[in-house]
Image (cartoon, rainbow, N blue to C red):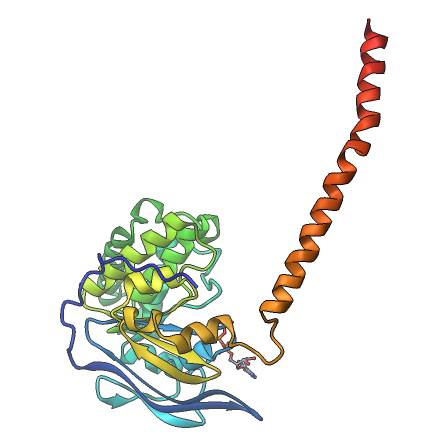
Length: 315
Ligand SMILES: Nc1ncnc2c1ncn2[C@@H]1O[C@H](COP(=O)(O)OP(=O)(O)OP(=O)(O)O)[C@@H](O)[C@H]1O
């Protein structure tokens, strides 16, 4: 596990503010499997919170409970003090937007169109207005486009507005997903593994983008396996292990917690090789090396002979 901590984390502008997200006692069972068990988590306004844990710990399932994709078996999720309905479009309308682990852009739409789709929860024009394309609709359309362009400038994709999403490089597709989520003007942005598959410079650009998102007043909850990214970005980190919240605290607290290290590396198990076994293996490896060295001259002899024959042949 990477445990590097930089000290250039920008402080949350309104850290200690009221909770935008309050998940209380969230449990999700699939038949006999409890994927998430009694998890409590809050995100305050202006905060960036990280959610980490080994594969299969229940992170995405928890996100799905927060965003109305799953109806939790138990528990409630509140946004700014109001309990959320279990419908994803209503959750988006309330003010929570998300991205997914696997990119879910409209591949054959342009960059601009993808962002415009993300705005639909914030436009009030109805079907008839759209069909008649009256002055109200055209004004709303213009406004939407201006705001979408503002978002594209924010993420640095303004020059690619007419490009098809599928033609963007991977890192830019990820950025576009964030822009589309931001188009719904959320108070809380959930990011599911935003840097998966990225180069280190793309990861750094994503870190800067998330900090800029927070500067604009949107709190962030982020799932990520890249520990360096999480510990350099987040104000607070929660660790899920086998569906339960194991530890929560500052990046410094979490990365030094023995339980977290054990959860990632695996705790010592009964029958694990002791010093005697390790010494035995090293001795065996040493004697194999010696054997190989003893054989070296015999292997080289024919090659020397070959080269002498070649020299003779050439001369
Ligand atoms: N729809 C489902 N039906 C049944 N089991 C599920 C379902 N979704 C998730 N699970 C199970 O719940 C557990 C938690 O999965 P989840 O995808 O939430 O973990 P994760 O922490 O996000 O993992 P990863 O880091 O690998 O993405 C796993 O055992 C998974 O197989």
